[in-house]
Image (cartoon, rainbow, N blue to C red):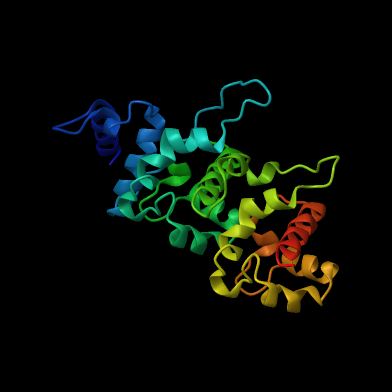
Amino acid sequence: MKQGYDTLVKHAVEGFKGMPAKGGNASLDPIEVARSVVYMANQSGAKFKEPEAPAPAATAKGTARSGEQIVQQSCGNCHTAGLNGAPKIGDRAAWTKRASTGIDAAAASAIKGHGGMPSRGGMSDLTDAELKSAVQFMFSHSTGASASAAAPAVAAVAPAAAKPDGAKIYAMGCNACHAAGVAGAPKLGDKAAWAARSKLGLDALVASVTKGKGAMPPKGAVAGATDAELRAAVEYMLTAAK
């Protein structure tokens, strides 16, 4: 079995009988190729052990790759065209369904691997924070957020000295449902729908968002948002319905 593993990995890395080296993705490290081989072989009944990740290279503090960079380097190989059942970037319906479970659940699935996607999307050196950033980038670019709002990782939302920008927080996750009224969410600007909710009071609405309600996940899928940022997002939606 060990010999079979070595042969499969060697063929995948170097190319074999019409298959290009590294599956045509020259940017892949050999360990990334090996992990993909293990995943595919084990799906067919093999019991190969996934190789250990190499020790992370020393990097300067603050040089983590952005979500956009990671998507361009790896995730986009499948998510741009929807290969192997991967939800296409820009497919609002497909991503809204995933956003409803929350960013943490989606990131955990990507870390572990799901369906035809290998663990960490085939990039073994990705940190959890980087992978979460890539997932948030795809969420944002598939549910109507602007590029400027999509780029930051959800976990990187930091409290600002000035009052938080409610419109920005809305664009980072709330709009996935509230823009089109998905799953019964009151649409942004719907005066009748928001009038009933405004009677509950701002504190009650913020508490509901924080905890999650119905199909809405806790914090509206903006997992890293502070209480002040969530309050600003609710205020933004209430104001838009006046």
